[in-house]
Image: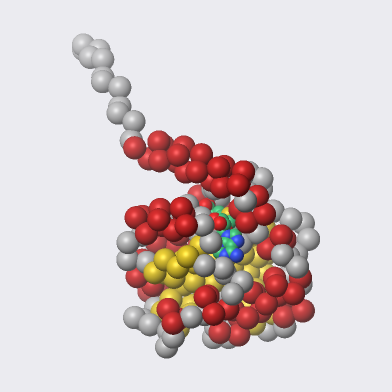
Length: 208
Ligand SMILES: C[S@@+](CC[C@H](N)C(=O)[O-])C[C@H]1O[C@@H](n2cnc3c(N)ncnc32)[C@H](O)[C@@H]1O
């Protein structure tokens, strides 16, 4: 049999996009290190670990919403869509204008809001009026804020959700950004996601 040389597979555009996401992210970190909280985007492994805690989207109705805080380049957002969360059910609150432009292009049916996630009027504004908040998924660098602000964003979100609905946060730290007893919540923690650099774990707060 003839050994016919195969043409080299063409590289898909995805890796190039990823490289530019990393460059974009690093530039953001140089400009605003405390807002970014990390030098590179989250890994898909971490995104999938976070998305796994969102309740089964097959039980959602048309009023269901999933609020994502600090979606950045949209790695976690894509994992939420892959889990089955309808793009139109996503409310994305991101501080960076540049990332908002990117998110609108990547998730055209999602509600993208440029604003401060610590401002309750923004996060719990008209986009959630009359809606069922199924989960909050946060990549906010909570440790750059004082305790009171962290407790307010996690505890305040839990008050808006039905009992048992999760506030899902990732963290690189061994200590907790919010002590669950301070906000009358229960906490579940995932195993460390070692394929993320640095390794991170998922913290899931639910109203006690
Ligand atoms: C650790 S990075 C997000 C990583 C994201 N999962 C990704 O892979 O691109 C934190 C993100 O939170 C955003 N952020 C930080 N503080 C914020 C705030 N107060 N309100 C909204 N977004 C904020 C930053 O702009 C950044 O995009």
